[in-house]
Length: 405
Ligand SMILES: [Zn+2]
Image (cartoon, helix red, strand yellow):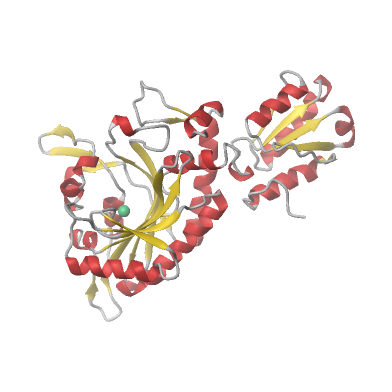
């Protein structure tokens, strides 16, 4: 069976070292290169959709998380506070929302600024029990693709529709195939903030946004502050989890006393939408490694091109070609060790999408013979054209290794 932990080892993507701690994996250079490409893509998608990015620290004063409700309603999932002195305690944050509420509150806000979309790919922590931890799918240190939209109540529907559009775009680019949509609602016996009218209103807004979409209802799966739309994935072992989410929150704007000046000069309270397009980098990559069996689309493959000189006589030309590929923005390696066949097998085993073979004839002609990791081989073409072909597929974030036609 495909298992991202096994593939992660074979492809040198990440390591879980007991000395670092369970649920605290370390991203190795190949995994980090792939993640970096995905992070860049997500930031660009958000930037084009008028998000503003911020940085905030992964820990904050205890009082911040008392105000947000996390210590009252979510403490079981948090690490115990860190005490510096009797009146100075810090909390490893379990969510980014409190800091983003402070971003909204950093100065007076006008209705003209709404919807205000604050985005961050930020760190947070959950005190998962060690028994449930494994590879990247359940971790204690989480890097979340997160954003909070502060908007007028009448803007919620359009905003949720736009978030759904972004989620679909991100899934298509990355190769995520959702297993289904879920409307996560309050359940019995759990702790939830807010009054019934708020919950009913938030639920109605999400049901409207899901018109025409097939979904199931999941009582007991809501956040403690509001209902949510969850988009589910299923891993190779058949386990279901949430990859994307949209949540409506009337509670935090009250707790943080958030307000903006409306067009008539009155003070109004915004609604806070919490959303993640692709979830945490950890869970996303646990899924992507299995979904692609390690053979990522070229745009986020750790190494995109391996240059293989047939013999020593082509070593200089290989180094020169690799330099040009790096300058063109590609991730490239030169492999000179061993027989050509062994090097082709090794690059294929590592799922490198493009292999560029340089023999004496290619060097003499300024050409390159491309092979693909799936076994296809192209006729030698001018080296510049080969680099342009790869660069074009990468820039287009194409799923296929060759342009159509
Ligand atoms: Zn949030």
